[in-house]
Length: 241
Image (cartoon, rainbow, N blue to C red; front, side, top):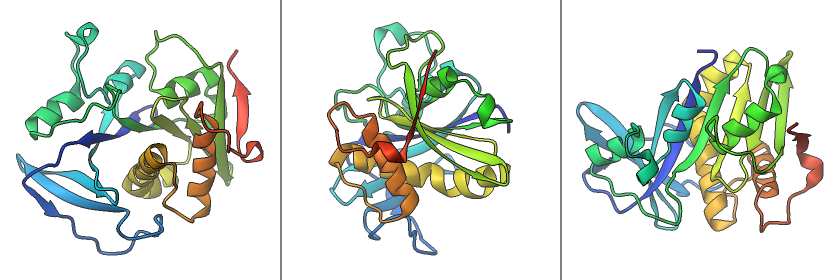
């Protein structure tokens, strides 16, 4: 698992068809109200896929991809095919077409993204790479913002760092904590935090009263060019040299 990238993506879509309600066994306390997001399933080829309706009436397709390189990560959230990617395999576009889901163009040709990078030691990951991950940049993309904004937690010497992208509709979680990865992030936080990010990015409101989501919202705000409300005491900055 170490060294692999997990790309969680959310695509704004037109109203889907052929879905069934998703059963919820217990309340998700991440959100301040039960109806902030309502999940539904679409069955295709023996597999279940998730579409979700937010409380503003907007639909999203949510899925994830395993990636082995920055190039694969970058292409994992492409929802429209520009000419320069004519010969590239774009798995999200293929999946949307297979499920007959129509993405909405909102001035972006990419989905919202939350990548998980599992590493041996967070402190050994250069800021340059952390920035690439958070911005979903490929190895050859130019570096525009030469710094990263992040928050992190540590337990028993194991770290998890959250790094925001800059106006890229994306962010990254980088961790060397195996327990967090397997028991908390992949089954829960990967998608919950992406939903929080989508909601905050679109509506300027965080649908949570929990501590960690509020720290994340402050971090995300710090990287928005037209948002000047972030508290600089609650995130860290590291320069890319």
